[in-house]
Length: 333
Figure 1 (cartoon, rainbow, N blue to C red):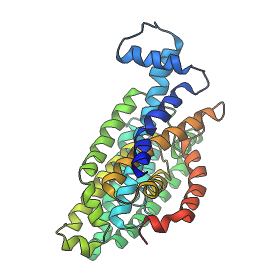
Figure 2 (tube, rainbow, N blue to C red; figure 1 turned 90 degrees about the horizontal axis):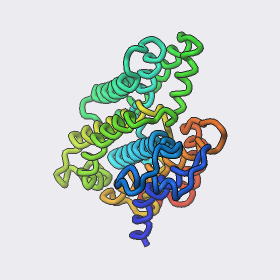
Figure 3 (cartoon, rainbow, N blue to C red; figure 1 turned 90 degrees about the vertical axis):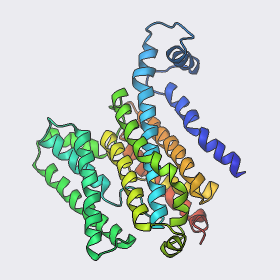
Figure 4 (cartoon, rainbow, N blue to C red; figure 1 turned 45 degrees about the vertical axis):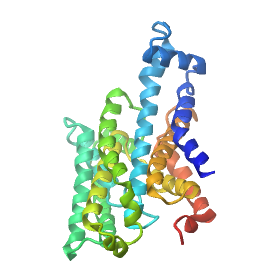
């Protein structure tokens, strides 16, 4: 049964992405979507320059791919951080990544419009993690509790700085800042997909190769040390690569919460806690969830609803449901 569930989860991004391509304000039949994709990849059909081709290739396809990349990055980082901290409530933003990225975006929109917004969001996301780690290191060896507490402090600091920027900027720029903070894929294009793809791959692929170490680290520090695992070094590597993936994803789409917290729990309950299979399945499940959420956000009304609102509305009650169904059992308690 677990094998069937795993196969369905692995195939889910392709199935949901396929439905997302012909859903939208401009109706395109599934058959026409197939013809357009085959024309672009294998040159099987000659369909000419019809409007449906531009809608699928230039608008919907990059948006679907970008949503999948962002969902995979958030979910992969979530399962990684939950594993190394042995804490089911940790998510990619616990170290202040989102708050740092939000501050970088806010000052770029408000005062430094000549700089790339993605670059500044990435710089401050990384800076927030470095500060969190430095603050936690003041007591010598970095353990999980001081690191989480310092992340909360740094996140609160950058959130306050964002509020200061929102208070000082022009009202027209304030609207852009608020919209970015809610998260959206409405500005997706192939260049954004390229930037996100390189960053997410650079962050997630090393974690994928080291995923077996997450099983050892999730057993506890003493057990991991007895097996010869360098806890401090591996923790830095996992946090660094997770931060890179989340920072790049956040810089191109804005802040999107709940994915890194909710999706790993769901996959863990369906397939078990072994990180050798849990990580790749969480990547594909996160991609599917984000594609589905973005499809809902752009088809529910005549205008785009920020996808961060969709994930927040669905995430909280769904997480409560998962906890009641068996969160403790899934973590082996």
